[in-house]
Length: 457
Image (cartoon, rainbow, N blue to C red; front, side, top):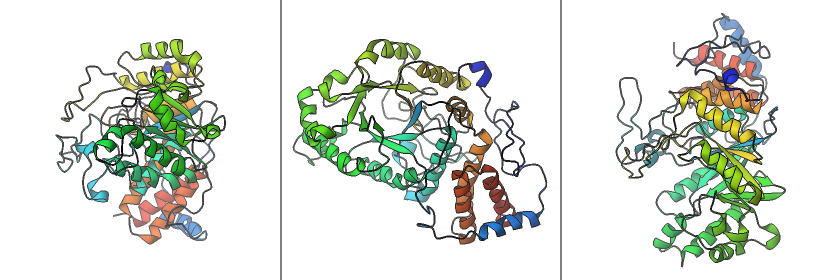
């Protein structure tokens, strides 16, 4: 368990030297190297004939695939020493030029142009941090595979989607559609999901003339959630009841309005509904508890949350985050944050994980997986590599190590390099299956064979 920061805090980019064929012999001897990442190309020499034999053996397992990718919904079993559930808050709001035909506003804000590329090949994006795979599209199945494999290998149990309603206002419809493209991949990897409703969108829906009132707009959204998401077998439940969230509420702030919205649920089917901390009084008896979020006073906010609200919650959700560094003002969006929380080379993430673990939270919400605009992202970046996920692996007690994260990253890169090559895509599908089966050594070896025998010379 992650109790002593000095013991487990690892510098970014450690280099593990493990033979691809020796999957179970995982070393934990770390070397200091700030920006280095791992590679499936280990230093030992493997003849082309051996690598060819690996692919020939994979050819013997030819099988039908669903849309060329998911064969079945078989899940991915991950054993964790830490029983506390961990869910990642997820932003499904990115678009990229190569996949969607344009750069979405969460990469550009009002001042940045990702078509501008610097001497190091980095695109100009609206963030102080840069994803290790570069700016991407939330709709990209390669991205979804990569993100969720990274999560599983880190011990994350599911995602909480930031969700902006069911109507076509601003980019809200795009966010809804992107959310729904994730469903098959989530189920295939055995991951749960929930919805974090942004109630302020109800005002936008009403202003656009798509509802008769703000409450009616939210009621339509809750009907959509009930009929579309609650019907999924992997929707997040607590004590056999669906569990969903509201970020606030910010716009709908009276108990009578929330009573009206909750009328969409039969009494015996009402979900657990969690508000932002110190806000459940606005929702009345419809609220089941509150969740903690990142705040300027950092750990003092944690202390206040647990001391003040714990006894009132049917469900308590802790918050862990790596830091906070908003780009909104520089990006021209006018949301000025007068505070930030230093990432401190992993110290902040360790502090919040430890704090949450020792309190009586039912589970942890990781804030966030990929909010680059606010600098709270845990996904691998050029600045921090696998550091945060390595710390999370230590906390959750999975058997995986950062070298295994590199396999998922290399699979993503191969998906892009060999796009349209049916022969190679079959091997990459086999690689995905081997990762799901926790046969990381075999997955690493297949990727090595593909890169050697099919890659550019």
